[in-house]
Amino acid sequence: MVGVLIRMRWRVLRHSLRGKQAGLTVVGLLAGLVAAGVTLLAAVSDFDEPGVGTDVLAAVYLMWTVGWVFAPVLTSGGDETLRAEHFALLPLSPRQLAAGLLGAAFVGVPAVVTAVAFLGLVLHAGGPHTLVALVALPLQLIFVVLLSRVTIAALGAALRSRRGRDLGILLTALVGMSGFLVQLLVRAFGPALVSGDSPVLSTVLRSLPSGWGTVAVSSSWVLAVACLVGLAALNLLLLVVWGTLLARRNTRVSAVAGAVRKRAFGSRTRLGAVVNKELRTWVRDVRRRVALLSMLVVALITSFGPMLSGGDDGPEPFGGLTVVVFGALLAGNLYGMDGSSMWHTLVIPGAEVVDIRGRQLAWLMIVGPVTLLFAFLMPALGNPAAYPWVLGLTPALLGGGAGLVVVLSVFTAYAVPDQKASPFAAGSSPGLARGLTQIGITLLLAVAVLPVVAVVLAGELLDQPVLQWLGVPVGIALGVLFFWWWGGIAVRRLSTRGPELLAQVAKAA
Image (tube, rainbow, N blue to C red; front, top):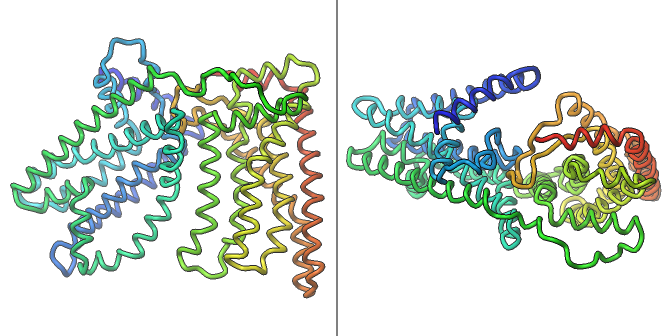
């Protein structure tokens, strides 16, 4: 079974290396080889203090492990070309399915460049420990791949379960902050690691599973055997856990599939019904929850990151504005998330106007409070003089974002996986043309706020506080204008090209 899935994955990969995908694969391969080259240099570097080389290599491999664990969450679930649901009807045990998917996971650029990086174990060992390195290398590679798969499966299961949603959101938020936290840790502990002045740090790096391979190739034979046995046992445990999660994924009914028994509040009008439906969908649809969570994580990083780093005059007062931009981009595929269910809108005469306006209002009700909270809070913590800028740009961007999200949804929609897929999986990509269109349309937000920038900047240059604060009503007027104007463009597009849009988003992803 393992060989069959490996051949399937190889066949899919070979046929996908065309056009844009081929270019992205080559770029990813080159970037990965550069990172692997740096790792190999760290493996052969000499340090003044004994044992520092082992600690440095263990720290580097910890970063590789962190990358394997967190990258799939931050990049839409990683590769899910072969999903567990595809084999649900086959007579396979969970362990067989997990083993087959594990083998297929090694077919691709990430596993190849990681294997090159782990060749540092062989270079660092030398002498008779080279034999140990040849055993440690595949065990360490299997460990990082399995840990990545178990993490994404566990987070997906948590977000798919009603009782585990809050835990899943918390874990995913920590994942989103991981890159920034790693940066802080490197700044704080890097000098102590290189100088060998922190025995506690050395012990921690060697005690973590990511450092067991490094310890095995640079220690006594007894400790080397213990590390290798530990890695093998841990890999077996992760394989069993992953098989269990895959079995639950294939058999458990998604929490969002339950029927809604309560009457929707505020749905006496057609517009109210659409708004209520959208708000409920944002709460219950796992994919939208992930998009919303990603938006909040980006806002937290851009707002509080520079403060924690000790930077002065940073962009933290404007951190709330990133909520609008990323909120529009991440929610710019509403009809793709709806899939074939959008036919309900198309068969009702005149429903396009109500549907577009309802989606705009619902998006504002979700993004608006968070953005306003950041807009009033962050300048007070960072630079109070930025209030005219922030309070002028916020309403303009909110109105423009509410129009942008529906424009993107009707012009650049694409199909996404069904509910049983990993909630982090984006499925089929928008494509090069749609991706460029998304970028171009998003640049309209920058054009939309130019009048606000001109008014506030003029007041600042002329030292006229009243003129600066005039940017706030200008921003409100622009927000209302772009909300109505861009929403009207989306209505006309949906009315004239609705069937084509339905055909696009109803395709299997």
